[in-house]
Image 1 (cartoon, rainbow, N blue to C red):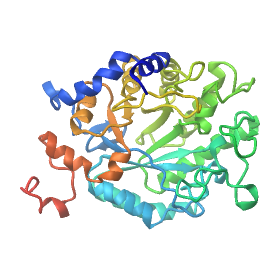
Image 2: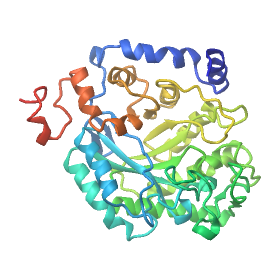
Image 3: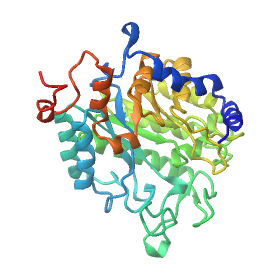
Image 4: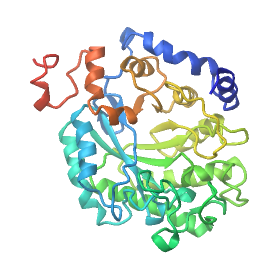
Amino acid sequence: MNRRLFFQTAMAAGVSVATTTSQPLRAALSPPAASGRPGLFTPLTLRGVTLRNRIAMSPMCQYSSEDGFANQWHFAHHAARAIGGAGLLLAEATAVTPAGRITPNCLGIWKDEHVAALRPWTEFVQQHGAVPGIQLAHAGVKASRHRPFHPTPNAFVPLDAGGWLPVGPSAKRYGSDGPVPHALTIAEIEAIRDQFVAAAQRALAAGFRVIELHFAHGYLGHSFLSPLMNERQDEYGGGFDQRVKFLIDTARAVRKAMPDTVPLFVRLSCTDWVEGGWRIEDSVEATRRIAQEGVDLIDCSSGGASRKAEIPVGPGYQVPLAERIRRETGVPTGAVGLITDPQQADAIIADGRADLVLLGRELLRDPHWPHRAWAALKPDVPAPIAREYAWALPETRR
């Protein structure tokens, strides 16, 4: 994307252009945790949970399950990053119903039998100082797709080959292939809300200590919010108040089913990056409303409602979204998106732009990124690395 289009796109989405373009440089130049402000390695307490640092692993689909069950791959994926020092590990988008999977290989938590397979990984993560969290999700109109490393990646799985009919707020496809989704009835919407509640209860039984609801990236929750995807004209569609109903109802119901000690996050696509779509202003108002229902942190992502979106991708490009929601609502936020440098991440926290940074691909490249960041920033706290490794490394040996 050229510079002019970058400015136009960011301004159309209601994002401060000066903030978007200048902050990555400021982050690189800012001293860590200057003037006693919290930094990347300051603990974060939300309700009854304290994270050892402000580094979280963003939910990343592994597409490696059978019938929704966790397996040794999932254990290894989380164990490596717990040993590597992250404060919070959020499990991938985990389907609350079989029809809520993106692919037939997605993780699930729609039945009680899934719980036992999840416990070994949550126990190991906690034993090594990290907090296990889970993202509960329903893929909506983007369901029944082949996984990215299938011979026909992301193509619709035919109904006669194990696929299923996608559902959404409206009978409207996201892509050009596959059947037209089924428009959910009000009774079906309420049933899915209840499936989120049941999934949250199973997640708690499995040992997860943070619950996140996935209302981003064009999946079911986001598709109710975005006027680009929601064409209903009833209590769940039309104006803003109607489009946020499924979000508010689900957050309220899940919160009531959880202990007061367990934090509840919501991941939002804070802007669709398309004129006439969901805007940052909408996310600010939605945050105010769900905070009243007991939501503790907004995980600030963007996009996913339209293939026409022009997203100004660059280092920290979504940080202004987290900053604006935090500033205008007082609700803690998480920043995600091309955060790769320790000084950049530390400055996001120290400058008060977000309360948590979420890393995705960077933690795939380097599970020990938190330890590398600790060595670069030299905070006055112990290294976030397993003692089985720490004794052997000169920078952490006491």
